[in-house]
Length: 79
Image 1 (cartoon, rainbow, N blue to C red):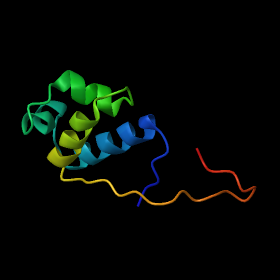
Image 2 (cartoon, rainbow, N blue to C red):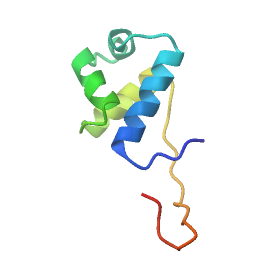
Image 3 (cartoon, rainbow, N blue to C red):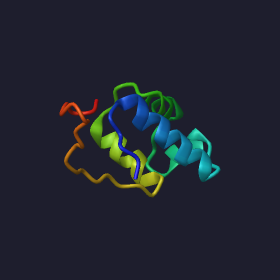
Image 4 (cartoon, rainbow, N blue to C red):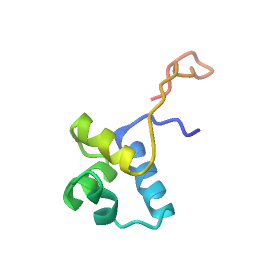
């Protein structure tokens, strides 16, 4: 499991996953009528509506799991 600690890292991870499925941004967004421009914004780590983000993740066959954040050795949360 990949720890996601920023919108840019989430976008990069979603892009890599989409490419692993051999889908274009247009193809990935079609299932839920998400425009290519919006997919590009999500994958660039730009702000997106949460409903749209979850629709896009669903289009890729992904879901989100939350868990407590791991602390670093100096007892500060990683961010």
